[in-house]
Image (cartoon, rainbow, N blue to C red; front, side):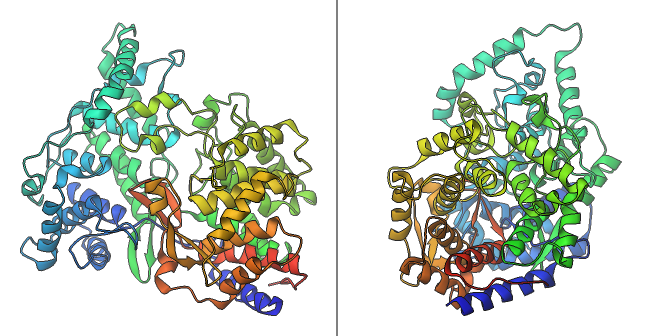
Length: 628
């Protein structure tokens, strides 16, 4: 088995080395279904930018994903088509002009939409797009734009929202408060899709829960004192917030959704559709496009820093020396992407110097914990030998330690942004969107970094607090839930993190987690988890094994083992046998927002199997790779 493992490691490493770009980075796609492709067509047509070749290619990809019943799905094993994706695709295809209502495929999509409640049943972002492009009335939003002016001293203010929530909510507030609408001569007629149902942002349940909170916010707004026009001042402040956070490529924080909303919000503020800020934003979105199996896909963001830090670390773990050309080029790229600017994170950590890393290639404002630990793992060896690397290491570690939440855990982007009362706001997906509490995966991965790459262990107060927080989050069955993966991912992060800082593999919590993992191993030796886990809030097996899920589970078992067990042997055999079903390689392994947004990280098929197999070789006494 050790020889087979070595051969598979060699195969993966060769593929990764071959795929590295000239600047040292890896540009594997960050794939999120058809949502961004549809939004891009709607955006371009609304702005009357007739980039026909670009639009035709997007139409080709969207049309190619349609199911036999006329719908579009979010993931392979979704029981029936996804309503939001289907309405979005129907709208985009018609607006493109390359499909018409009498087409058989379009009629099949319309039939599915009408049979499942009509277009008023879609998720929030599409409701916003439908309203601002003139297909329905703006639903009543009981949050006034003046919320932008509530001071930091008020118990709830703008910076209590997550950075992602703020970035999307601020342009949304401009649009909803101005009732901005823009139709064009090419706008399709979608009126028959609504079945005379009103589009609403709030359900009755949300209205009841949110009323007292909204009244409280309104009281805060009433208390504002100004000699000028509060509404105009609030609109100006919202506009300035966006403009101050435009990245070098012209996008707003490198995210597709908030950049799209920003473009429309600026038009609501009087900017012409050809204004340089809008033109640069559109170009920035188009520049993030990639190709998947030859087809054009508009990425939600780029995952270049994440890809590169993970892969560089995995190559070094597999035995490729840090002096190799591949690793050196990657490290130079990683160093060039360390953040030097203050972002919104500094509001809650005002005495902290910048030093983290972000997720996307051109992200300079919002670093995150996961990318920072991954970058630090990648530069760890050179940090002991070269002064400039050491300075980068020290800045990164300092930023990381200071971003621990008061409850002992770590979140992704900011510190102590966890006021649960904000989830009562009438924003769909608010639990994932509006706040950013400590998460199992971020906390576990951070502990793993400190345990394996610094001298800190469970005796240190910071580490002790992190362990305590993790132990409180364990489910009764022994698993943990991750924020950016689900149960297998969360359990992997928690267990490997705690073991790295010295928690005994015999600890009851670890033992329970390992028992849970073993019980979910498939007959082929692998593991596979469905996206339905995220929707049903319980572990749902996929029914087939995938390489990333198997790698996470295998790595977890290895971290607690002193010798190769049958479960470990079978897991490794699945990875080296490469017997996974073809569709599993494109199945989303990443979680975005429950029920609406899932991520297929294309690098995960390589990087996590390579890591797990390298750790298998270390446990089994097998050979690692050397050199390029």
